[in-house]
Length: 233
Image (cartoon, rainbow, N blue to C red; front, side, top):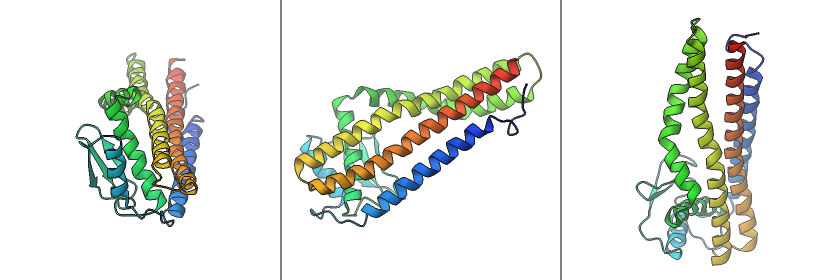
């Protein structure tokens, strides 16, 4: 039996995904807020820590810049720029240094030719295209009554699958960047052992947001497959 979109039992999968993401986001925000009030013994800012870590790894062609926003930190492999946000750039907390070190982990991955990062970068245009075209195809397939409606639905599901694949490939990239960051912070003595443990809590909470995002995307994909199959039946 087919249920109209937004009025079918499978919508519970979407709601589960939303709840998972909200919980992960709340955990991340509370953890970062807690340790953003703990000043590191080194007194280094996120910017200073990032530059020191990059130079220690022999990386001198990556710029560290400021980017507006809160926790909008990221590494851009195309322009080799590491961007740190308001919560990180000029802050001296263990949370700020941990996030800066995590982004350095991505720069190190890039410099060392880390395969999952290369795969993720290659998937970016495919995932963006899939995300933009998936729902129009699915909606067309749902409102049409012709024999081609199933084709549109199937194409929409395949396009959305590309975006889900990107989310899944992102997980090992993020986990590895955090492992690199924690190892370097411990080895350099930039953070004391107790500060490294606090930083690990921040990065673990951040990793949970990626896990939640992937889980939510998988649940959405499962829902779309169920809808597609119900139309076929």
